[in-house]
Length: 287
Image (cartoon, rainbow, N blue to C red; front, side):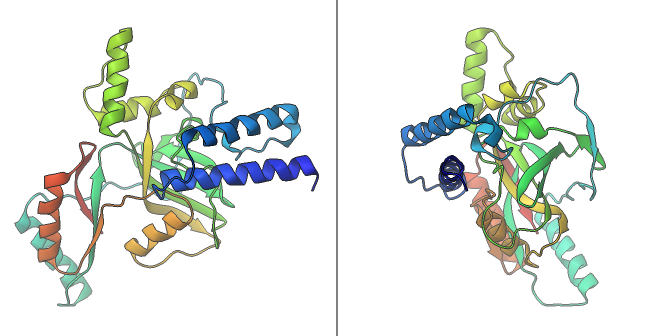
């Protein structure tokens, strides 16, 4: 490897490491100014050697030209909607149906996490590199939002770690934290732009921009919660273990996850969560 190639590789690896620590581990090692300095250095070297730019470089999040319309993507595995229960009686009835189907009276273990109020997306990685992203759409066909998803810094352009599948399609939610929502609306009021009614509408409107440069200016983030396509690799059997594996590969997951070994514990977790639920989250999901 030539010295300049080695330098570029090291810079990209360092930047990806800092992005992982910031967005996934919530434990940054360097101040923003140092990250920005490294990014400027990488941009400078890539501008001098454009033939060495790679699609998964941290500099390549924004760059696609504005679209005239979104193309359609057919989901290889349908993105189905979640079933709902709204009270204790309905939940206990659901628990009983599952036990009956399993022909078991043993307590079930639920993995409980917040249901996010954003936009469901599908992100496909091939050999660890982000190659495609789509909205849920009607569950069978969604819109191609690859260029926009690439601008979200919480979403890795390249996975890291060991035993990454050849093809891995993850599902998750793009959402807007309250502080980001207020910032967008404050700017809109100042400039006479569109004021959004709630964080969900703001997230959806920001993600479905035909110009990725607009999306890049919005403080969107992402939590991964599921998988669609899986080829050339394996995942743990339990949902909670899968979340840990996603995190190990550099995908951000919610830290509001609780394992509940009885229906009563699950109900208590719901009650506790309602007292401290963020405004961009709705309620609790149980897997």
